[in-house]
Length: 76
Image (cartoon, rainbow, N blue to C red):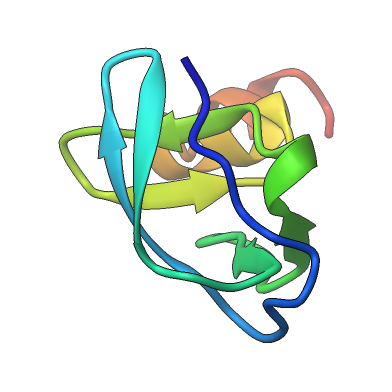
């Protein structure tokens, strides 16, 4: 179940990342990818780490955080 947030909230949100869900601690329109710093609109947020409490833009960003040498061996 995703949390509801209003369109009137601008700026960066603060979230608590849970297993399969997140909770909005401080409202906002986006969070930042922990690897790239790119803004991720909350409605597009798909990847995060419960243990590290951080968001990721793409699966490659997840791999880069948890397995930094994996992408090098794939030639990325």
